[in-house]
Amino acid sequence: MDRIRIKGGAPLHGTIPISGAKNAALPLMTASLLTADTLELLNVPRLADVALLLRILENHGVDHSVAGKRPGHTVETGQAIRLSAASVIDTCAPYELVSRMRASFWVIAPLLARFGEACVSLPGGCAIGTRPVDLLLKALEDMGVVIEIEGGYVKAKAPKGLQGAEIVFPKVTVSGTHVALMAATLANGTTVIENAAREPEIADLAECLNKMGAKVSGAGTSRIVIDGVSRLHGTTHAVMPDRIETGTYAMAVAMTGGDVVLENTRPEILDNAIEVLEQVGVDVKMTNEGLHIHRNGSGLSAVDITTNPFPGFPTDLQAQFMALMTRAKGTSRIRETIFENRFMHVQELARFGAQIRLDGDAAIVDGVESLKGAPVMATDLRASVSLVIAGLAAEGETEIHRVYHLDRGFEALEAKLGRCGAEIERIRAS
Ligand code: UD1
Image (tube, rainbow, N blue to C red; front, side):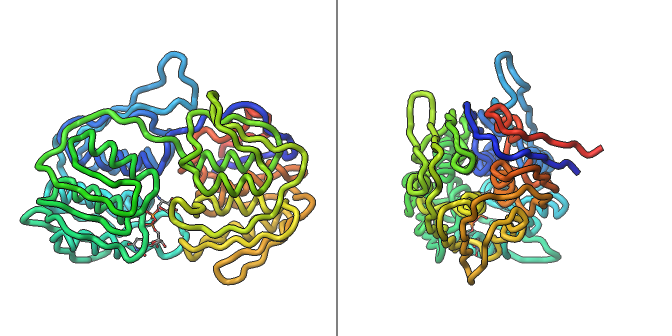
C-alpha cells in the first residue's frame, strides 16, 4: 500500500487549483440514470470514488467516456465525463460495489423514478458511525414505494410510478435530500421536501436537474418544491468547486504560515468556516485571482466550534480543524454533532505530541508549542488529511500509512502541496 512521507516545517507559498467537488460529482453522475440522453459533466475530479461510481453505473448498463487531458491541461484539470443510460440492463446494485462507498446507494432513487424498481445492497463507506438509510427509505415510502429488506438488499418497487408527496425530514440529511430530490423529478404531481439539507451540492444537483428539464425550486433552502415531469433530457453541467478541499488547504496554510491563492473556488460555499478561520488569525480575501489565504508569523488563536449542517461548520472539516488547534494558543473545544464516531484521528494526532482529550461528543484540544513527526495511520477520508496538515507543521519526518483513504477524496494532493513548497512525496507500494 502507498505511503506519504512529509518533512515538516516549510511554509506554503503559491497557488493551488481547487478541483470539482466529490460530493457534487457523485450525485450528478447518479442523475445520469434519470434520462436516456447523454449527460456531460465537466470539472469532474480524478478520484477513486468517482472511478468506483463509474464502475457501478457501468454495471447498470450506463455507457461512459472520459475525455483525456487536452493541450494546456495540468494534472489537476478536471475530467469531462459523458454518461448515457439509454439501455439500462440491470436495476440491481451489488454488495461488492455498494459496500465500498455509501453514496452509491443513491442510485436507488433514479432507478425507481425511471424504471419503477431497484434492488440495492445496503451501503458501506467511511467507518464514522452507523450511518443508517432509514430516512432515505421513509422518503421513498412517502412517495408510494414498497420496500422489502432481504439478504442485505433493499428491494424497492413502485409499480404505479412514484407519487408526489410531502416529505418532512425529522433531521437534516444530505443523502435523504439528494434521494428525495432525484426521485421527485419524475414523480406524478408535486413533492415538497421540508427540513431539506441546504448544502451547496444540493443546489448544484438541482441546477443540473433543471437543465435536464426538471422543475425544482428552493434548492439551497430548507424547503424544496419539485413538480414532476414525464421525462428528462441530456445536458452539460460543470461540477461546482470542492468546498472541503478549499477549507482543507486554507487550514494547511493557516497551520504552516505563508500565502496561497486557492483558484477556481468561491468563499460563500465555506460560509461559517471562513469566519472561524478569521477568528483563528487567518486573513481570507477574495480577489480576481482567487481566494487568498495568508497567515503571518503571529500565532493561532484557539476557537471553539460545533459541527452543524450547512451553513454551519462542516463535519468534513472537523478533523482538519482539530489538527490546526493542536498548535493554537490556549484550549479549543470541538463538538461533533453529525456523526457519533468521528474522532478516530484523535489518537493519531496524539502521536505527533498533540494534547487532546475526549468529553462525550466533544474533543478538548490544549494547544502545544510544536508537533513532532511520527508514523501514523489514515483511518477515514477527512481524518487522513488532518494527519497531512499536522505533518506539514511537525518537526522532522511523518509517514502516513493507508493513504487509499486520501485518494478517495483529494485529487493530486502531493502535487498541489508540493508546488507550494511542501516537502511531500508518495512512496508507491512495490
Ligand atoms: C454527506 C457527505 C459527507 C458529509 C455528510 C454530512 C456525500 C457523498 N457525503 O454524507 O461527506 O460528512 O453529508 O455533511 O455527500 N442519517 C440517518 N438516517 C438516514 C440518513 C442519515 O440517521 O437515513 C444520519 C446520519 O447517520 C448522520 C446524519 O443523519 O448522523 C447526517 O447524514 P447525511 O447528511 O445523510 O450524510 P451523508 O449524505 O451520508
